[in-house]
Length: 269
Image 1 (cartoon, rainbow, N blue to C red):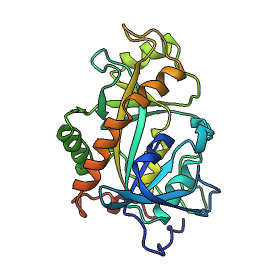
Image 2 (cartoon, rainbow, N blue to C red):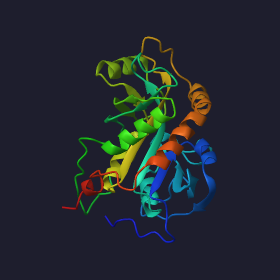
Image 3 (cartoon, helix red, strand yellow):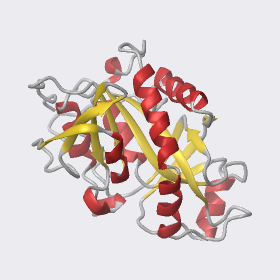
């Protein structure tokens, strides 16, 4: 696998991946069309200012939410952000709660993942080069701590830790599936964290998660089954809070997190 090339002109060391509604957070965004060996990303990378720092933004689902979770070109997305200069990726996502303790509107910074997707391209090392990325701890540890600190500073403390199960989508879970996930001790359910996070690891990027609970999943005691309209409405209602946390996080994020994420990028065998 050839590494993403040098950035010219200088890009943004911090990137945000999330819903297209986050576009409004960035000042004077300049769009860049990035070509990748894996096809086109969900959209052009927009580089604008947030909290006085250059930040790259990519809408995960593309403009108008045109790509469902199983059709997102995750490899092109992560590659394009690395090409734009990103070394830290802040991933904002809507998730369902699998625990009664995680109510809609709550924020979570998970620390573990379980993959229940199928058929998605999972790696940059598809041959003839092969490599195996270490993934015991999927997220950047100091990066997670920075997200938690930013949320506290904004008066909306986030739950520290939790396991997110990632399903194929685009449908939501049956009650039986939801109860089974909860019985495993998993606390969140989403559709996009994988392979997004594991691809970031293969590129040696820090991945910092911020999850907004938009609903109680169907199998949870209070859960009545979710609709996409409910998810979108709750996320929109919390957009200002998410924006405040992102701005605080970007402003306070040190140039050196003191992590080993870059060293964890695997070398071809």
